[in-house]
Image (cartoon, rainbow, N blue to C red):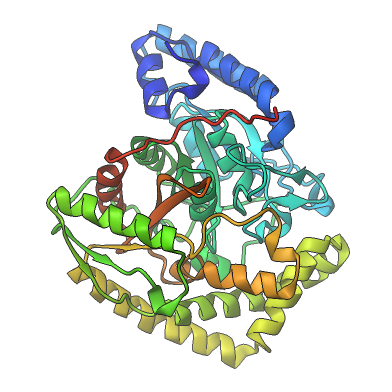
Length: 466
């Protein structure tokens, strides 16, 4: 058998359930992999191996007693450090929160445990989980195991780097403006932003979030196979009354017409030739599998991205401005200042109008996705960026900001999006994004499997500097 850390979550769960592997040996193999590569990558910043080994041994005992180990039987998972995990600091990449120890698990963490997942570590995020790059003054910088000179993405850059380097099979991430989809893209993986309300969320260590995060922030999985995305989504989406936004919509596949819209340049955004080539190739793959694909404009993205920025800045002024000043972390301070200048003054009237416009946009998108059950569009307008490009200058930040238009827009409507890895271009990972109507993750997974089957499949990276 190949190295255990190279197995997918689906392979691990099947082997542990079938008795050909034990959860303990799988956990030990991933702990050894963390020892081997994490010093070079810095993805896992809180090591949970002692708890993980205890959980794995308990799982093996349950299997020996004939009990059901759960759908994620023995699968090594990581949790982003902006989510509560009992006994561990929810730092959100901040020195000020280094001692913010959680007293209980967030629902998504509890769901992974109930499903048989084994949490081997907690992964890095930029300060305030803000950027598409991963560096902070508390935990340091995370490198991309496929290419140390490019970003691993953000804000779930630690999760994507851990999955890409084989430190875990499933990485938990959060997404309010691309923080699952973009790290997956940057590290040559798959990443799902589910529908708002699909995966329950709540951190007891902090006050409830304001309306912007309540409407746009979700948790989701990063993985090396579409089967793993489907498996981990089902585990994460178990009900929990702690989240008032949770909606118990079934995950089972439903019929849909195999029609896809292809939009190469949403709202006229600039898109690199390699990205367009990947989109056209994915469209041909779908057509070869019997899908109808039409190249058409999609509904507005820029209006939605502006609403995202308005809501985010309004929340920041109320709940985070003083914290930003106290943390005094240069990268996030710079980014917040540029974003504030870009969006301009935000008052109550501006926020209320943005929320009104949000309803109009959701209606337009849902009508569009009735005609085309899936949209094929860029994850980013560019190939993965050079490390720390966004904080080199204001012009560089605005270049990054523009390239991430689809990342910023889609959370406003609460729709699911799937980043699908499709290979490389110019020595950098490449992928495409699929978008579907609310609660239609089944469509994304069906289309993602078709594109994935055309290869190449994501493999574990071996950092050449480790």
